[in-house]
Length: 364
Image (tube, rainbow, N blue to C red; front, side, top):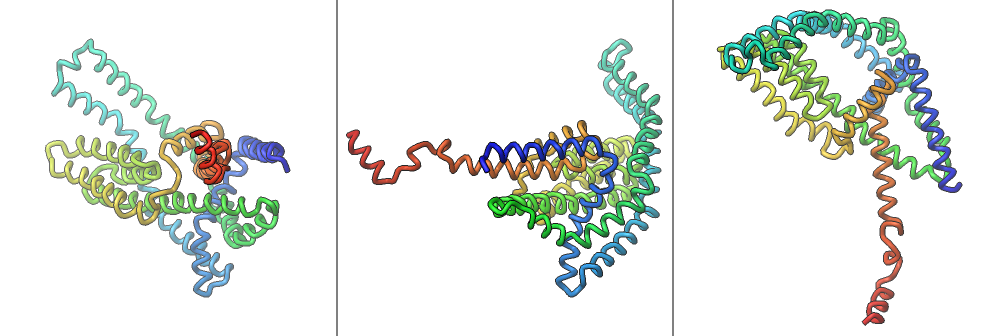
């Protein structure tokens, strides 16, 4: 088939995918979540099969362990996390007032009654005080409408169970439908995409979980108020390089300054927690679990999350990473093809060394 027709059909398929994503975003949400979970758990099922488990037994084992972990999280962690998040939003106005008083006491010349900085701080404080409760209620109501009890407790686990059980057969079935002439190329691209996603999603997800747990436990042991929230935020944002440390560290150090002002050892301890976490992440966790070459530049990742989140909402943010990884692999594939083409190398690339020497001697 001519390249022009191939591009037309693949472009039409991509357009259909985007339209379906936009129209059925809310409907396909549990299926996307279930596919992501099944994709992450498939290597575990394969490992259990290697040690003698059947596929159904491996799937049942993974499901039971996941249910136990979910129940423990729901009973021990989630209530405390929600409580601290609510208290932090309710306390934000008073914390901001303390910040304003701190600045007034130490920099009175910058914050006189008519200064622009003072007016800005007062405006921000008033906004936080008036909108804090609304923001919390909006976030909670949106989360509940997006991930309602039926989706969370019934649909996602059931769909994940069936997808995980039939994952290898589905992959084999899709492989059998590939156009025979292009099957090797598509398999190579799929392998590269899977390698990138495995390195990023599975590896970076493990890094986020480890760092989030470390930050939350360490900050709570130090007695920092809202330490669980700060640690969870830092861990959740770690998948974007440097953002987790900056946001989580800034939030934690800011809270420590208000709570431990004058106790410089405690403030230094909070700073040390994030410094140690960044050292472990950069030198141990990321090189071992993620690898040094995953093909997802932070700027490209942030753009994909922003673009897909704006266009398709929460569902778009879920598919942003795999789509960005896939586009990156395809782009590198075409760049390699371009560099092997005559368009890049020119006519001289087709000439033998003897022909080039002959032309050189003729010119002489």
